[in-house]
Image 1 (cartoon, rainbow, N blue to C red):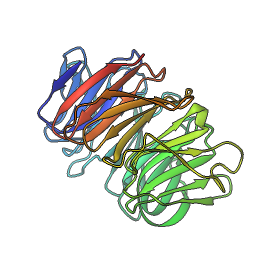
Image 2: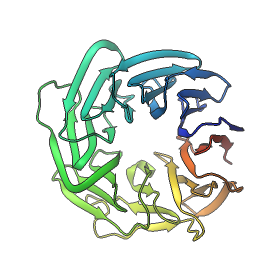
Image 3: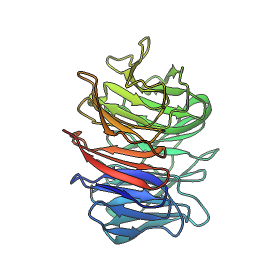
Length: 322
């Protein structure tokens, strides 16, 4: 499948059935089967899979959080005057979280009356559930804040590091929290003792993170190839060197996606190309060889057999991988 939607592709996702969906800059969600959901009156800024695995949650510049299933649209929340720039969900706890300015909002997909709001000192750029869906990390200025999702009155754990933090990823065992920053660097913490993991040397901003192989590897964008950090052992990447896969001096990696259990990784480049690699033999399979607008969205099914991509001008597609 290859198509053009004539709008910036904010996110590409797969539902639990392995079908692709695309959240777009025109406020719609487009599904691989051809259905269109008119989710937002403005731009779809963020997206994630619904906790049920059915349909897509999106946040928009209209202040709405919307659940799209085919052409069916359900509004989950609306915060007037705010942009919903990050949304996350947990299949384990059935909770939904989203950022609205300085606020973290938490809703329960099974209980419409449930509502929690946690306030930060600065705007929240990203939200991420831990693997059990019990704690939520928020990326904000000078660090990440950790909240227990269901507890109304609490003081957060603040993981400090100077600078603006913009995107988060938890390791599969919940022991490490990684953050990409506005600067050209990756930072992280060992959550148990708040040990800092400073991981620099990137030639560009790290826009995309993905843990692979049961959390034993972390793939990132921000270089001429996919940067792979080892996370084996209690110290994670401390004292270890990263590897770089698919190095190409002519392009930078914009987006990465991978298999949570397996060791297959996909890359979307700033020149429009898309490739996939099995890290066992590091063989590169060029899925989209023709160049074009920068890749803005990338997803892979958990079994590594399908890859979806979208670009900054509305090009999109789905590949079946051998």
